[in-house]
Each structure stands twice: as structure tokens, then as C-alpha cells.
Length: 247
Image (cartoon, rainbow, N blue to C red):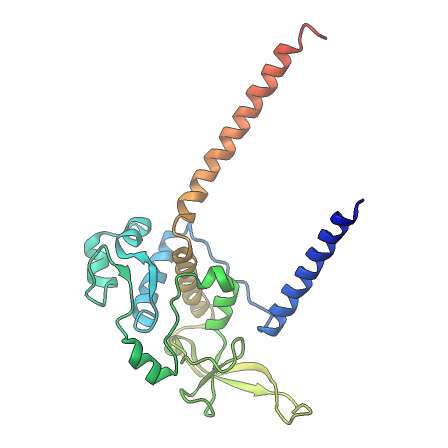
């Protein structure tokens, strides 16, 4: 075993340790999203949720309305009537109507584009983040988040989830009390199970938006595997035919 190979193994191990430390620093203990981009009904519900609760601030600049309609099995009329709330053309990208200068004034920064959020953070992170808002009077918008503390964003789904409050533990050496867990103080319009499905639908749509081709890629992958299996059988039969006289 040469030194180059050992160096690569050591670098890989260090990278894994760094990844785990970053996950812990960013708020580990992620909840499993359970997304399935092949579930067209979930994607359609997620698209509606995004347009109603997210698109006012956030864009999906790498996704067009027309592409979304094709992939999600929607007609142009359905998209333009129920999902296009900005008056954009059917072939336009999904861009928020919020002016950038006003966004900076209201939130302190321009809300980020969410086209690649699940590819950068992961679906489990997005799912957990959307469930981790709690009321915090010390914050300008009145909200905080246990997964992403001091986020400059209110809870977009508070009506469905209800109002969450933090339950704090014992203060540490600095005098700050950590958040032990969150409790619903005022129920929302949905039960916990229903709200989980709502967040899952929205996360599924964002996962699709990050890689629209993944839907077709997964379907093509099945045929590729079947083709390779068939090709392997042909190769095995051909090998037997060539070696028949040798044996």
C-alpha cells in the first residue's frame, strides 16, 4: 500500500469528519423528509403551496412556468390561472415580484432564490427548517428558528402549524438558555400529521425545482438497467459460443 493511497484515505476521512462537524454546527438532528418526486399529486400540492406562501419573496429563476406545467401534468390554463400570481408569460422563469430594494429595507437582505436550496442544504434540512420556527419577541419579525437561528424570515406556514414557543433549558456559562424543544401553544388549522404532509409537499416541489430532469432521469434509469441486464445475457451466451470448441 503506497503513500499516495494512504494520503487519499486520510483526506477522505478528514473530509467526512469536517462534514459531520458542519452538520452539527448547522443544527443536526434533521428530520427525515420522506419526499418522492415521482408523486405527481404531492408535486402539484407543493407547487400551489410555493406560489401561495413563498413566491411573494423567493424566486425559482432556473425553472420556467411552461416546464413546470409539462413535468407536473398541468395545462397552461391551470398554471396561468392558479399558479402564476405575478402576471409573467407562460414561458418566463418563476421570479418573485418583490422589488430588491424594498426587500433589503424590510428584511435587511434580499430573500435568496430557492432553485437550488435542496441541492445545497438537502431535503431533510428544508423539511426540518420549515417546522422549526418559534415565536421570539427579541427578533425584529417576531420569529426565530432552532435549525437556522436568527433567520431573517417569518414563519410562512404559521396558520397551518399553529404558534410554537420555545421551552428553554438551564442557562450555560454565558447566561444564555438553550432551546430544549418546541411546543405548540396555539393550534393551527392542521393536525401535526397534516402539517407534516404540507411541509413534505412543499419540500418535494423544491427538490424537483432543483433538478427538474430528475423525474425523467429516474424513469430512463429503469430502462437502462434492463438494457444492461439484457446485454449481459447476450454477452454470456456469446462467450459460451466462442469457448464451446475450446472446452
